[in-house]
Length: 453
Image 1 (tube, one colour):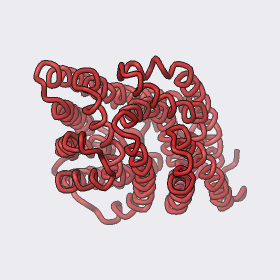
Image 2 (cartoon, helix red, strand yellow):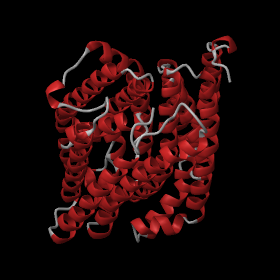
Image 3 (cartoon, helix red, strand yellow):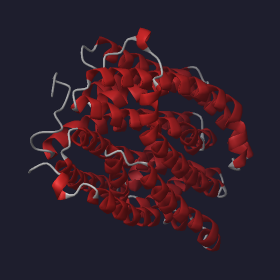
């Protein structure tokens, strides 16, 4: 099945070494992207002030709410492409790829208008303080101008992940990220544009990564080769992409809505707490990027093996992914807990901001392996084509638990530490429900239907 040095045969041979080979470049890509995003935060925090730092940080949850529905749909493109590729269905693979890229372009253009029109209104709904809302709205509007580049890169990278290629996206992000760092330094320190300079640098880097991934697909000689003359929407593939992708996108959007509720609660403590949350959340982003790489591997491996009927191997993939995810997240989580002060000190020299960040890290870092397990179960289910029920369970477990915590318990115990107990609590509740769902789905593939070991 493997056709070039970038692709991985996910359906034969040992699993763990291939999971690591797949996950490590993707993990490094995500961490590299976050490091470059951290440069945005560090530069504005150090050279523009804590208000600018709070302004950039307060947009994160909102941007995720607006974009994650479409990014979730890209998971549907990943699952469908992996299934066709493993089964050797070249025609279907090509048509699915062109449908996915066309969808990415349309959704990116749509998000430009949504972001320009709704940014300030959404920030007002979140009770963003008056001293940062103007800068927050400016950052969001510029950021959303780059949405077509953002969408095209993510859908293109999803197609490459479907065939096991996570190395070239790492290279693309490295090039784009270095450009982002250069532009941040130029447009914030040399040309003092503040948050606008950071946003312009981000959009430019997204454009570069988009061009590189589209060029990669265009120059490919495999079934996922991209030809712009073939871009169109074929309803049969669009429906199949939506069957997996829309529930995943809704889940991600609604969960980020719960993060926006948390952001709103953090906002009630003022701009110092907001800045602390921005820095702490960026550190947590490194943890999430690491475990999400394993989740992406789980979904791609599961989808390819499902496509060729190797159901028993799917269980082995999940077990190995849980071992890998838990090991990585425990090492990084404990490290973030121990060195929290030093890590937060990179973002800001304000002692009060660091203290707020430490309150958040003290309850979220060590148990972060639970978040990895919580994501792996629905990731495996999506690889088998089951996306709707895991979406409902994730929304109930994550959003329901956090909403209950924020509106019932938090008002009686107002502290950042108590607020963020909702994180591990929601992870545990969701794992229990997803495990039951996984058990019943796997029962459909009884021993009689499984391939001989």
